[in-house]
Image (cartoon, rainbow, N blue to C red; front, side, top):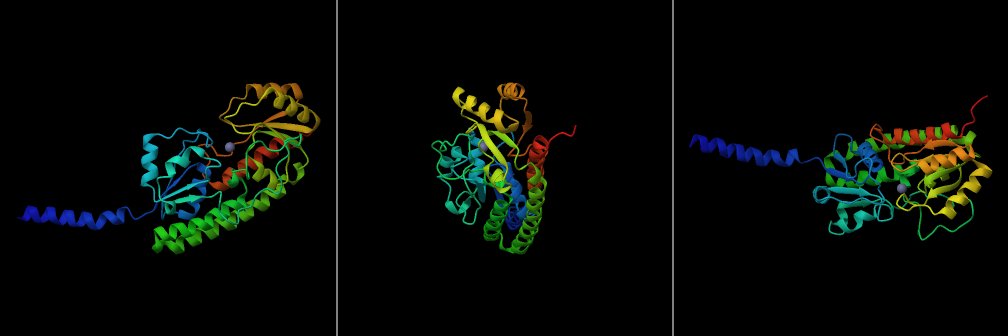
Length: 298
Ligand SMILES: [Zn+2]
């Protein structure tokens, strides 16, 4: 009898405690930059996880069975939208819309003023709409943070004040970051460069940098010989630097850089393992541009 009573008590306690243990909202961000923004708002009042491994391309990723389970288990999934993570569209069709936060369609986002010139005035392929790498404009990180406050508050109303305070602090810090980047990058505004894939227009547009071309539109598409020839022509005329990315083959880029006497830079729009905050991600990008585009003193 006593034992049954103890077991009964444990069961009752378990039932009482279980909801408390699981009370923290579980957020799942598709890619690291969105997770970093979510972490700022969540603080310790929600668990933030990232779906994609660091080295995976957000443009094209084969979802595993365990990924589908993580998507089902999350209270809120934060992603850009089918414009970027096209591989998620089908998986998310089975998940209620109120458990999703696609950021591409948020009102108040900032978009680059005009499409980045690819150096020979071609219209931009079959892509419709804007560059989906929208987190590369810090003001957009603020827009996402504000919507996250609403979403998180619905999931955990008792933490509303905490989410609001976190978001306010984050938005103030990225306003400062935005000003800092404007000042830092002003001296190199006229220096021409090309990027590896066409994913930087939010950053390039915000800081009025002089991008003259790209190697490939998306990382999955191999550039044609004609395009590479045109790229080399424009870089020869007004290029200082060619930026590659950490996870893509760069041997042919190194050859272009050598033959044209350019500098080779590195841009990481996702942020590697060591990047621990949104601010750091953007500071690293800013430093990469600055280092590659600044003239070396003789
Ligand atoms: Zn991309």
